[in-house]
Length: 89
Image (cartoon, rainbow, N blue to C red; front, side, top):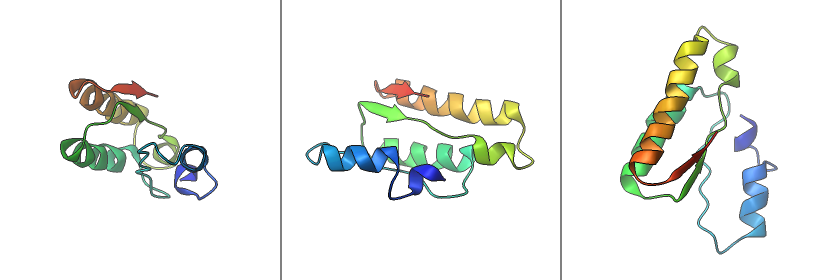
């Protein structure tokens, strides 16, 4: 949720480095499954050298289990690695 805010770390980096191609794929209140689904679509569309994954808090305030949240994050790491990118969690 906080990553989607205009004052987030990602948006500060975008302002600091305007020539870098930085995409923020975040939407307030969404869970890791949403992140996984949308990252999968984005990685099919475009290669990224680095993918920063920051999520799971919304999962913990829902019926999503810790194991499922971790699995979703791991799948995002695997997708990033498969396209020769670096994942940062």
